[in-house]
Image 1 (tube, rainbow, N blue to C red):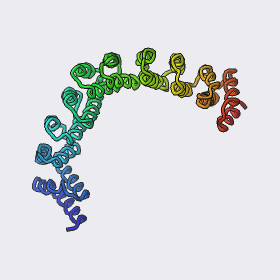
Image 2: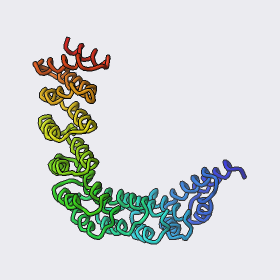
Image 3: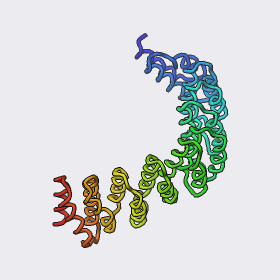
Image 4: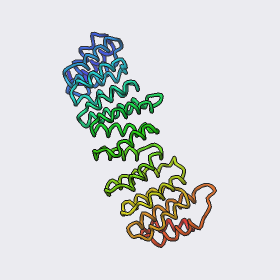
Length: 348
């Protein structure tokens, strides 16, 4: 029988339905022909009743890795929330290559009450893929909580016994939750003895939803003895400064604070990129000094033109001397013909 005929037969059998059809579908789940295997899976998933659920759980508990994966997929397709205990058992006992798929389903089907069990699975995880899957599942489960900040205590409590990779994962979850308790937990890892954990804590602060983490990053940048760590802190800090949800004056103030720290050319370019996103005339005052530096001339020109363009397009736009002065300087400084043309057009 050719594959198309077999697929048709599988679909016809699915229409008949009933527990008697399940062994045939199970047999074809591992077929080397993907279309046949997919048709068998869809037919299996479409069968109603507790007998089908029991058959899916039998697949999940099978010793064969491919059958386990088929069972995990079917649990998700059928939205079998009652299978969570079986999924958690599989996450502890199955092959390491299967666990990421199990963890994904736990995240999809579980609730915030499932998070502590997954935190334990994260602490036991060894492989990178398993750690990442556990992290994503925990993040998904905490997001389902009526008050996600309620998860912070459990996450922070797990930090003490976690290895560096697991600590980094917990820090990333804390950054997605946000809030004062989570920020306090992340602060506790800034001075961790492991360099990878310290870096993860800095990156977590840089990914914060609000500017609350800004002072911490600025202080770290000031104290950093390593140029690489200083760059990371500044990049994270300026990443907060480009958040369009913050008032322009606050963003400009953050840029001014960073301006006192930038020294290397790459640091100056990061600052200019942040300033270029601030739609405020006073941003031009901070940008224009960099027009005189050959290493930052073009970045400063692009930033100034971007700010001026948005200011002039705004409702009730007002032409200020600062804006005219900045555009005149750009037109003289830049070697980029397009930028010079844009500056001249805005001046006119």
